[in-house]
Amino acid sequence: YTPPRHYSILHKNANPNNNISSKIQAFTTCVGDIAAKKLVQEYASYPQTSVNLQTLLRTGRGEFLHKTYKDIQKAQNNNNNGGESGTVATERVLIQVAGFLRRELPIRFAHRIKDLDNVPLMKDMPSVQQVKSLYLQSFWDLLKIDKEVKTVEDEAIFAKAVEEIYERHSSVLVTMARGAFEFRKAVREG
Image (cartoon, rainbow, N blue to C red; front, top):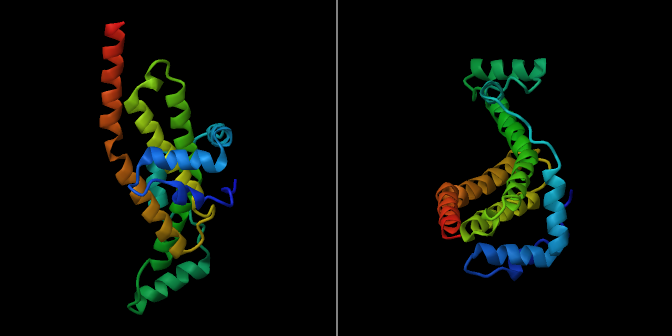
């Protein structure tokens, strides 16, 4: 998938006070509500990659990098000459992890958006709508980033975007708890 050519319209049409619903509205205006839903459906149709702690640990150690003999020899020479140890491997690990997350996070956000759309009654709760808007914004923010993370600079741009998403989502647990409370209240009131 390649984001629409005019994704910059998202920022031009968005409310300058950084209102999330304003950005989502600008997004759907830019690509059209039906196109936005189809895009989310497309990504939600892809399976999520299962990841266990052992795989994360091995990835962090660089065990999946398929280093060549030259890379290992170069790292050893750097260690012997007082050079930076593991810089090549560390950069490769960062790029590899960023590449995986660049592919995986939009799929996971699309699954969460679809999940929230499929919860009867709760999907109309204001707090659940707020969380869905956060997921939509994050989904779109990730799609705006180049699909392939090839360089350390690409990784730094991606890392900044993920950090912003992380901060944005810091209130999701509390907001969803509020949604459950709203749901329970609505069920009691009939």
